[in-house]
Image 1 (cartoon, each protein chain N blue to C red):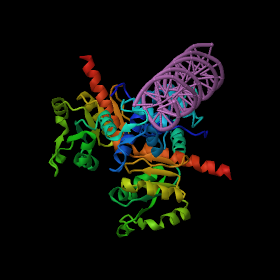
Image 2 (tube, rainbow over the protein chains, first blue to last red):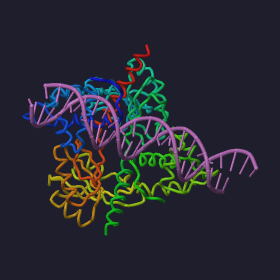
Image 3 (cartoon, each protein chain N blue to C red):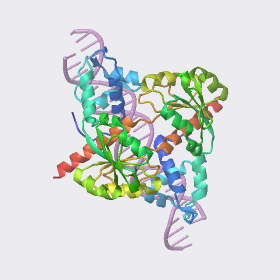
Image 4 (tube, rainbow over the protein chains, first blue to last red):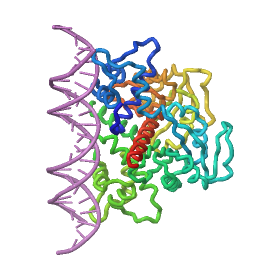
Length: 216
Length: 216
DNA sequence: TAGATTGTTAATCGATTAACAATC
DNA sequence: TAGATTGTTAATCGATTAACAATC
């Protein structure tokens, strides 16, 4: 396993490969070629091979890759085998849902607790996790050395929460607030922003419809 | 307004600019320079200027852009001023939530109805929208000339639903199923896939932590 | 006129694709 | 050995950045 930093585009594809490999039936052959993966996913074979080469040296001429080993290696590279403590700020509907969702464990995320400025929301949830007052945020993050934060507060408060997170030692932010966050270069913000998705859809549609018109 | 097709990266930024402009206070000056936008969003000024130039010719030396006109133009380019009928396949929790959500109107999306293969789910929702049996999907899409489809079925059924959508004339697919869909080139699939987001977060974190270790 | 700001042209950078040598 | 498949090196493509001329 190599470790020069991978681009966003590569990581996205690696995640696709992993998902595809895991979805193979149990009676499938135990090895698979990059070309097969590429065809199944509608990508170029060279691209798949290059992507895989950037994280693994399991490929063997004539044989390809052993599926189970490749899955292992991808999970490691993508961090699904870690267990990273994660905190949430904003204990509204979404925040609570994320706090309760068990599935994050599969991706190496462990939702520790949520924080909210509204102290009436604090207490324990049915699933036994704590919702704590925001004033304890920094203290707890530093103590537990937490590096991942999730923002589920309204847009107006998102930047302030973001600043607090950075001050508290958080390195990676998963932002559900529909706003652009300004952060230092070494901090990653991953936006989960519906407006952006919709803009892409909309624009592609307009283009498609124009093309059709031109054809007539 | 010009109209050569815009790249995904540009569209994402345009959506950010629009959001930022809308968030300006009412008493802000009525014009704004690309440099100001760039600084506020932590981007390069040339990039902002080039992005804006690709959709507008409102920029005036010394003055910049009139905020309200720019908002209008961005909304048009991003399609927020259209009203695009949209259908949903999969009337589970997520499908129903999307069907009920009023906010899509602001982005030019009108959720017409949802479809489900399970006929026990059919009927009218509290918000007065219909959940229809999947067997009527093609007929209705063709009749209403629907071009946008949302997939909220489990991963196993997503490809079949996707194929049905394409057959029914849909051009743009918003996919919430955690799986890779294979489509012809002229169809856009926008994936709303948490696993991919998480992979990006995780990998960045690993990188950051390694760097810190090296510094010691 | 001077200065701010635009839009464009050219240079750089990074990612994808094509060609090919290496190997089982 | 022949053929499939890998990984790498070079070529292409596209996007970002830098430099600069145009303009109000």
